[in-house]
Image (cartoon, rainbow, N blue to C red):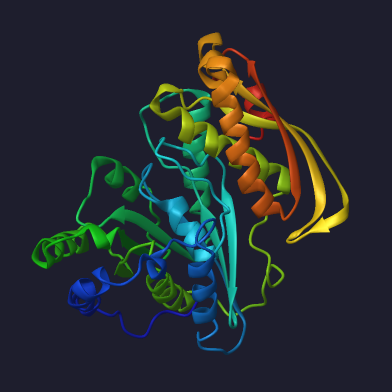
Length: 357
């Protein structure tokens, strides 16, 4: 593995950030829009910048993204890939599977592995399975990125830190730099973090800024081994369309249900049929007929999702369909219903059947 020649101090990055903060505050927000759905312009700009990465022999490596729940891992992955491949919400452990996102830029192919947030609040079989996904992702990768909030280090962060390997380079990514107001506070925090673990590098940034994502890609490129790419140029994930459909529906379910709905709800795609559109539309050349079931553990949860007169379920379906049409490049007919299966989250057979290996 190629190691960086000199570890750069983060001070210059922080100085530049605070020097530009005032000027950037007066600029249009489009330049800082997050990549992915709803941030097409930012994603395109990031893609153009990626072309400026140094060329050379092909490099390809796996990068594990780890951290406590709700620290911004999935948002980071989507920004790095330039398109939504991992769902996001405020609910802990929204990410439940090992999500692979692929970014190919210049001679480099980055294989990012997003993981569920490691936590110990719940002890059922589902939660144990999710925590196992975190630890397994740390094996056979070339570099680990630990995501924390800049200026903050919690007990949850410390538990993840204790899992990190000593024989693999670990980068500390101090996210949400844009929320830090005082440089002195951040510098004290950075010095404290340097005493907690032998990080290969500490990278302060904001995942919402395409320029920061470009800078991170340049740093990560130094850790990629020289080898042929594992995925075709342009491929952004190793997950199937059925999987992505279930994830998008689950994202809308969690976002529109808030904290009322237990995290043990899931989505199963029961039908996925496609055909060529007789009259293609701009950006759409096929029709997808999709049926999915939302699985909950109690009748009260079912009523909560359906809502009065079925309005909440209709809204979940409508917002999911819009995202799916953009993601799949297809006209989508989406049918949703809700099923009650008590105790599924603590049933090993059900977990396997629903794809939680």
